[in-house]
Length: 403
Ligand SMILES: *Cc1c(COP(=O)(O)O)cnc(C)c1O
Ligand SMILES: [Zn+2]
Image 1 (cartoon, rainbow, N blue to C red):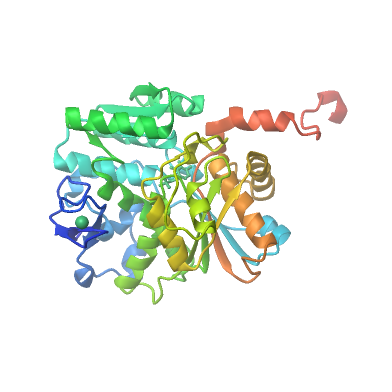
Image 2: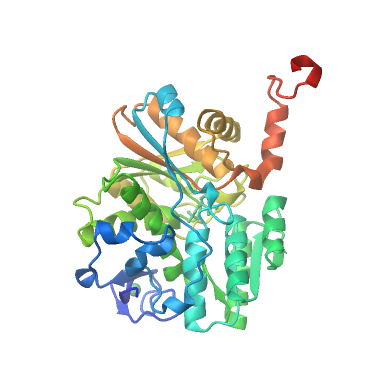
């Protein structure tokens, strides 16, 4: 099973046994799971023979006991080569990693599957999370499968479909009047008080490991070629850091010869603390007190991994870009009507930012670009309906007009 060596502090480099801790006991820095890379023997043929879920990469996942794995089929989503949108934008090698078609319809099934499995392995009696919407459903679904009670803390502004979805899986919902950051603080207290595993709080080092499979799959699906450039939406910043770790680990175990991918991070203009830090050449991420955007799933004013995300973007040679609500909604429509992929606003941010970056000359026509589409449009139909009504183009016809 997973060949975890230790947890390593990102700040002081301290090494700790892989227990249920999430910050460095010495300096409070975040901890990353480190594997015994030299002993991991994994070849392309072996991988190809395995099940089409994120668990096919188990040597690089942090669960030791296979019987604890909670797998509802997350991962191994399609990497779609763009035909129409690439042509419109003038990109010859554009791909969409369509993670909107996971079991609970966002990429959060990846970290949730790993974290709930790890919570079972540690013997926790309940799980939970603080969520901007999608994580709630992902944790609730995996908790249902694992027969664990689930508690989710969400801001009351989260789209109704996402709340209904989490409730359907049997989760207990704590709605917080305030921002995600308020919900996160309350969830932290609940986790401590009750000794519950809050996947993105007290077992966070394990949780983020699930997301790096988004890098593994892309490389495998590109026939073991590493893309030149990846566009990643940013909430807490955990996803982009995990993707960078994933590309790096494939190089470490010798499956690719180069783990360097330009990583570009994107946010909505109404909540873009990481983009602002990057653009102002600062290392400091200034919190946004009142996020205001249609991209609720990215509305984290005080991103926990924000400063690391800035560093990741800079070191990789990537860029940061934001998009307005109008641009986001227009991009949702553009992706749907050219590629057949209906995404939620987070995916709209990705496509809108891609368009701007191409127009401003930051991406060249021959680059192999992967856009991560992280959530499904059916989760946010209310948001999109409001936009559709404001366009002049008529989409509803009377039968008599065409029949
Ligand atoms: C959570 C989320 C993100 C951002 O992930 P972080 O790890 O918080 O940066 C992006 N897209 C969607 C759809 C999400 O739900
Ligand atoms: Zn430390």
